Image: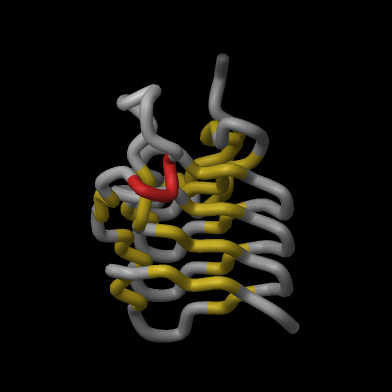
Length: 112
């Protein structure tokens, strides 16, 4: 299994990572067209992975994102915004597919 974690990253308890996951809290600048991106300012934003999260194979979590408690990031998902607790997110860019309903005690599809 090979994963890439580039901080700053906070990882909670009982978190599962599948293979080839990338969490990157770093971005290179590109605004100055007279300089290559490798020579421009680097910006970091923290990533927070809360407790009991499962991140599937080949998923990417970008800088500044929080993945909420007991959420699932589907394989191949690119997470570009916060994921609320008890949600399943998938796709590119990641979208909420299901949310756990504590009243019905069931994972329910999110209506589009």
